Structure formats: C-alpha cells, structure tokens
Amino acid sequence: MPRPVKWRRVENIPENKYFAPCPKGKCGCSEGIEEIQLKIEELEAMRLKDIEELTQEECSVRMQISRQTFQNIIDEARKKVVTALMENRAITIGGGHYTKNVCNFKCISCGNETITTYEDHRPVCHHCGSNKVVCNQKQCITHCER
Image 1 (cartoon, rainbow, N blue to C red):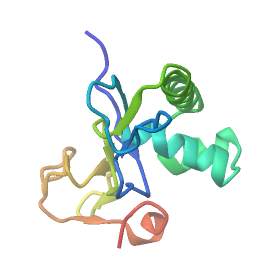
Image 2: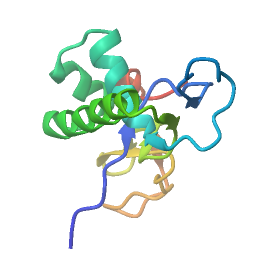
Image 3: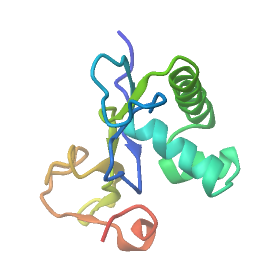
C-alpha cells in the first residue's frame, strides 16, 4: 500500500484561475479549447523557484516537502505550462493536495511534537491521549498562517 500524500504548504492562491489562448481575432471566446489543470502546489513551486528565485532546498523547506518531491512537482508543472503554450490549450488552476495551515503541534502533558495540518489536527495527543495539544509558537512562526 503506498504512503499517503503529504500536505504541501502553499503561501499564495491566485485569484484568477483560468488562462486561455487568444487566437488572432477571436479573443474572449474560449469555447472548444482543451484545458490543462495546473495544481495549486505546482503553481506554488514555480512561484518559489522562478519568481522568488529560491534554491531547490529553500523551496522544499518552504513547502515542507522533500527536495525530490519538490523537483517532481516543478517538473510536472513546467511540462503542463509548456504543453498548454505549445498546443494552444487553456490552463485551469485548482485542485491538488495542499494546505496554507501547517503547524508543529506540541502536547503539554508529554512533550510529544507532531507537524500536521489544521485540516488533519485532532485535539488529542496520539502519544498519551491528552487533550492539552497546542501549536508550538516558537517553531511555528514560519509554518502557521496567522
């Protein structure tokens, strides 16, 4: 059985989520144009690497994934964008396995720490069963959306 997909942290979700080619004299009409879906985390990977000009290591840390996973994501994203440009396809942005809310949760009772998303967080410690679980503020400054 494969491992579950890890949440990918994104900092920006675009307002405009649809881009279509504008053939000469036919702008505004995107009927019948094939679409390619670019996942939110794929766009984030390109933003970090190509716009913010971060290293692969820095990008993977910001997205809270491994360097290899980051490389796989950005390779797929770039392939989709080039395909859309070369084949006059529209790009829709959406979907994926991402979160904006990742935190290092700490159990006050036993000290156990778990990095998880707010979507997956349960108010009970997996280790000791205590309900005294809080976001570890010191290590969370770069991880949590406040």
